[in-house]
Length: 194
Image 1 (cartoon, rainbow, N blue to C red):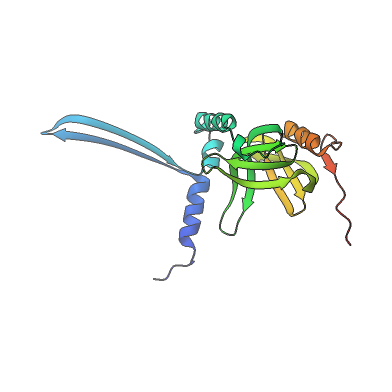
Image 2: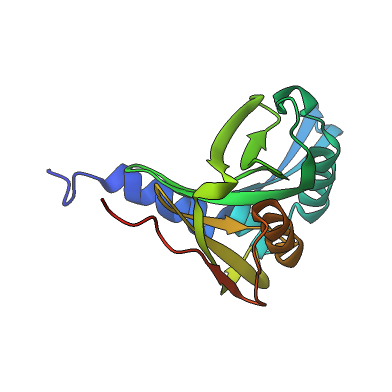
């Protein structure tokens, strides 16, 4: 018997993570008909986005965000660089095999903006402030809450940013770039060709 599709396992895993599954088990250990130990197990298996959509793991998510925002990366700052904004947020990464919001701590300094991951100690996105061409705010449903995502157009392409403090992010980027930022968008002309 041949499978109908070659990527059946990938589809099963994708559906499992998107929809989730709850496992429940009751186990009673008895000796000579006398119950000695009772075990009640409940487990939820799903992606973090699905868990948060259903209201699971919210306290953990809040604690992780608070922990991330208190971590310091002063060693990553260059001499003469001044930190203007720092907050937990996400960037959308779209690779061939995976598409996901990647968490980290956004930093905006007078010279650059970057997303830093505390667990790896690495900067996963970095951009000079002068390379930003345009910024727009778009409505986004993210982890069961309505919010705004930021589309950041820059010299290398564009990036999607999700951060709860989107206005503060935009204001800090304006201060770093020393440009006027309207309520929802700022534009910088692309460098002329030739």
